[in-house]
Structures are given as C-alpha cells and as structure tokens.
Image (cartoon, rainbow, N blue to C red):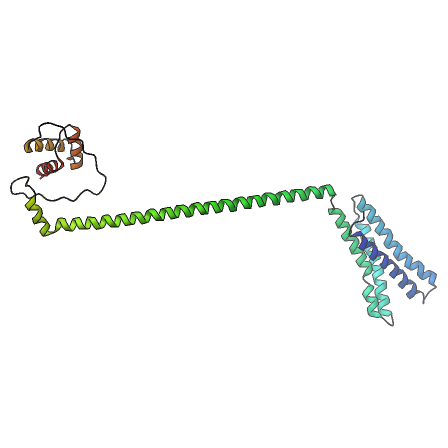
Length: 285
C-alpha cells in the first residue's frame, strides 16, 4: 500500500519532469534543433529520475548516500534554474512561469519527507500495541483520579463530622464552665460576705474555745473516695491530734493534708472529714 506521502511526491515529480522537458524544448528549440533541445530536457529529467531511483533503492535497503543525495539536489537545482531563466527571459507571463519554477525543488522536498515517514513508520501490530498501552495508561489514570476524588470526598465528610462533633463538645464544655464559674463566684461571695459569716457563726459549733470555724469552699477537682467509718469508739480530739501529727510528720517534708488523710484512713482510723480537717489545722498551726 502506498504511503500517504508517496502520492503527492509522485504527482509533483511528474509535473516537474513534464514542465522541465517542455520548457527546455520550447526555450532552446528556437536556438537549436528541437531534437537537441529534447535530448537536453530528457538528460535533465533522466539524471533527476536516476538519482531519485537510486536514493529509493538505498532507502529500501536501510542505507543512505550523501553523494547520491547531493547529485539529486544538483539536478533539481539545474531544473529550477532552467525554469527561472526561462521565466525571466519570457516576453509574457513572467509571473506565471516563476510561480511554477519551484516545482523541482518541491518534488525533492516531498521525497525527503516521504523518506522520513518511512524511517518512522510502524506496522499495524506495533501501532495496535501502542494504542493498547496508551488506552491502558488512560484507564489507570482515570481509575486513580476517581479513587482520589472518592477518598477526598470521604475524608472531607469525616472531617466535617468530626469538626461538628468537636464544636458541639466545645459548646457544652463552655456552657458547663460558665455555669460552674457562676456557681463558684456565688459561693465565694457567700463565703466572704460579712452577713454570711455572722450567720454561719451563729449556727455552727466551735471546735475549740475562742475559735470560729471557717467555712471552706467545696473542692472543685478530682476527689478521693472516703472509706466507710468503722463501728467503734470514736477518737477524742487529743487522740485524733496525736494520730494526725504522727502521720503528718512521718516524712520530711511533712505530708500534705490529702496525703495525711489517705494514710489516716488506710491505717484503719475513722473520723469525720470536719473533725479530721480541724485536727490538721490544730497540729499544723
């Protein structure tokens, strides 16, 4: 099957050969016998065709000759020169003759393009394999894009859900903290108020003479469970003070109230939180 570039090259070559032969015969026929002019035209066209045929033979064998190529272009330039000279010496239609003077060089250029086409031409099997590889690559790229879009949509949905849940938790925590702060402020105001102090003094029992118990704020934070009070005789204030002081000073530096209370109850002693804290204040004073 003829290549797509072969048909234009053959057509331009035929037109160029006929035009060159006609111009040489007509132009030189006025100065010499027409058989001589015909031989000159055939010589130019024959040399052109001979070098073209040899170039095609070498191309079919996968070879190339710079000398043959140079000779072929020389014949093309000669044919073009003859056409240009005829156009410049013609008494009429100079522009029309110049317009077709490039045909020999155009034919050589088309055969060069055809040779390059043949060098890069592939069989149908190779082209089918290339198309299959390209289609497979396009399919894989499309699947990868779809997977990435799906993963991005899933991640966006998850982040939206997590963000909304976090916002709800933050709002609840903010409202709770606001309520606790308000309640704490109310307790602090009640604790430090002068009227409240007098009222508490009138209804609470004094732990020791001439000492008014101070109302402590509730602990806001982690608390420790209080062991159940054992049934048995309660410690007197002096005994309780002695036990608290012994536990408190059992380590240097002295234990804090929370550590002392933990060890006090772990040792099996029982006392209410109010009495234990009062004893702590007495021995720590």
